[in-house]
Length: 337
Image 1 (cartoon, rainbow, N blue to C red):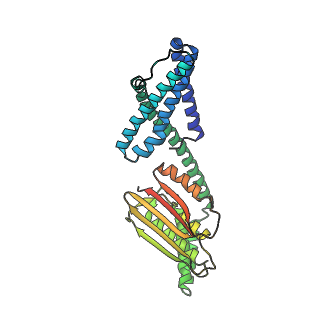
Image 2 (image 1 turned 90 degrees about the horizontal axis):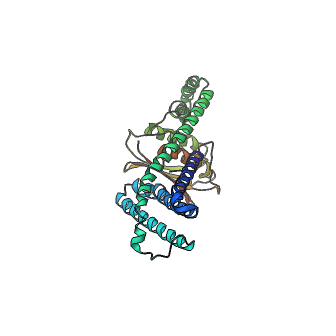
């Protein structure tokens, strides 16, 4: 879960300021200013370790991945260690400033500080829900803004699309009489344009439609490659699956822009799209001819894709790219809808 957005950062800052003031003024009447300041700092730091240790580490890594036993054990360990450490530091600092008389620091005395952390742990769950709510609200606003902008751009670009499709169909029939292969390419181009107009604005599309779009794109890219390219496309998934549009296209587009040598006779692309264990796994492998990996290509770069995946799936996805010798490997894992 991301906590670096300006809205959630400000919210956290205000909460911690309120906690500091609450602890300080609660302790002030009985402990005096000096002891209140020390106890406030130590207590707040220990609370922060419990809260952020839970919501940023234990909860997403263990609880969300259904490792409940490990999560419970580590929560107890966190509370015990932080509580006893808080007690030890408090006693040492109080003695240093002569606030209390020297005492023997025993295990049982330190264990006395542990129970207060239980309430903080419960509050950390509430804190996490609050942060998640504001993060989700902010992401929803961003998605709505992007959707509105996309719809506006689409309206601007839709200059009689049906007229264009009908014209392409007429050209297709004319060309088919003399050059069927070229006519087939025109048909693929028409399908790609129809996808952009009819399918891409939707929230989800059939996976088969997305695959057909990718195959049409690759067929048109092939005609630009002098010696051709070998494409191995492994497909193993249920026909009724649906995914958000244009999630897979980024990798394929990057392959043809940076993984093809037009003067080589040994261009090869390996693509795999497999359904496995409630997830869809998409991987690509190709030779890499450019030294610079693009981060933003016509708005559909890897960086933008990662942001979009975060908005769609939170942290429940995996996206990796790496070089392995002469090969460039990309991998995407998303949950099925």
